[in-house]
Amino acid sequence: MAGNTFGTLFRITTWGESHGPGLGVVIDGCPAGLELDLAQVQAQLDRRRVGQSRVTSARREPDEVEVLSGLFEGRTTGTPIALLIRNTNAKSGDYDNLIDTYRPGHADYTYDAKFGFRDHRGGGRSSARETAARVAAGAVARQILERAGISIVAYTTRLAHLSAQVIDEDEIERNIMRCPDAAVAAEMVALVESARRDLDSLGGVVEVRARGVPPGLGEPVFDKLDALIGHAMFSIPAVKAVEIGSGVDVAGLRGSQNNDPFERRADGTIGTATNHAGGILGGISNGAEIVVRLTAKPPASIAQEQQTVNRSGEPATIVVKGRHDPTVLPRLVPVAEAMLALVLVDCWLLSRTAKL
Image 1 (spheres, one colour):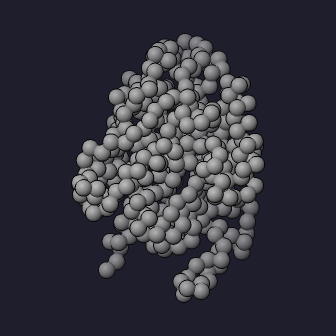
Image 2 (cartoon, rainbow, N blue to C red):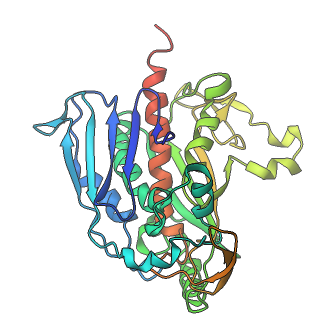
Image 3 (tube, rainbow, N blue to C red):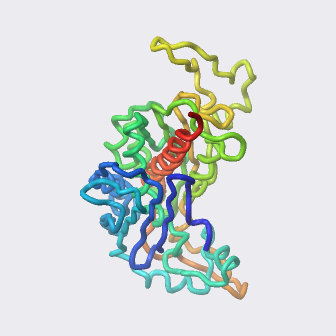
């Protein structure tokens, strides 16, 4: 099965299934000598894990990370880093009714069409549980980026019709929606609980920002920074749209409004007065804040009776059992941060080879 590896110099390969013994990631290309803080890695996994609040899945997984290789006396050795996260609370019996029946909105049919065989337990490899491995790898990448003065933050900016009206980043980790607007966060929680009572789910938008990104990251033509970011974000389950900077709103602007004027800053560096471009011009970072928005669909696993077909094409009805998120947004936040970190660390390492 191809498509499990991401990155060029800082390269990750994730492995494992939702209901297998465990899942994990192999990181190749991490520079030697990094004092790796495993507590930071665990902290990011704790932000992503299931069962952390009433707006996430009730599955209980500690997601404790184990280091199998690539670390000696607290420092990276330059060899592949293997990280393992064991599955301890899978209930595979909840999925027995899916052996020959396709869930609407899921990858059941498409995996069958591609491979002629699939792991029906929790979606197998297509499960969002795979993103735990990405978050672990992203936590390693972030520790490299911190040395370069690059920081990343993400938050829920919209749930269904509710949108944050203020951005108070101190508020993000104070509420279970990870919304930077305390008042709107409370409304979001109530809306999620209403949807759960209706056996339904909700979609929305997460925004992720990177600061301190130096100009010059990204490659011409096919490996443009925004193309790599799009690749990374679209690879996250449930993400259906990705915007950078002003995104789709640029369709309503004139060039005179959309262009970001250059200026000389007080510290002598060159920057832009505005940031419609989201920190990227010609596929290369310009030194401004990288701004990305991800639109996520409502989770497909809902407990309402739905119409579908079985593998023979015969009509069937299905009720999805198990423990599922009524919205992906709070747990999408750390995943989005991780994927942006993986893109930026790879581009940062590549940029060091661009010129003498």
